Image (cartoon, rainbow, N blue to C red; front, side):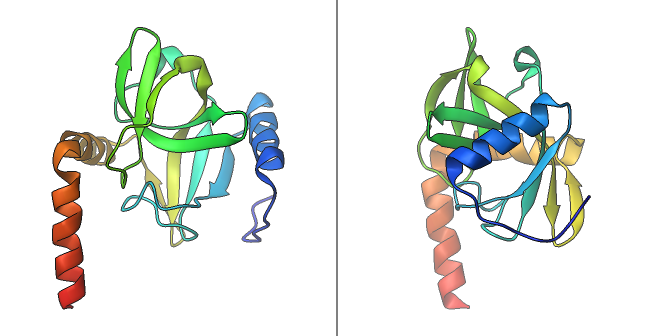
Length: 154
């Protein structure tokens, strides 16, 4: 049953719920918290639908849910894949998270939901946007400074 009701649960319970849902071959949907994936996802407004995935089929630019530690899941974009490891970074971050074993990936983002509309993140448009944003990683700090200047002037 689909509902707009939102509940807050402790991280360990949340992780277990997501993993159990995926293990039963269902997709899972949850509201994004935090700002690390801004401007693509906005804290508290957007939600994502994640699906179980084959770690060997992951591609640079995919957005994945991965277990960074026992207590911490990350929803970040893959910036590099090397020898069974992936490196990730949040779209709003100025640093990489480091390398994780592919097995740390729990799910891949299939779609996003923004203001009631679905965004198919596997479409050509969103894949190009993701790749472009990864390419701009070295100058993100400058991009964010320019954005703040224009936002402040409004």
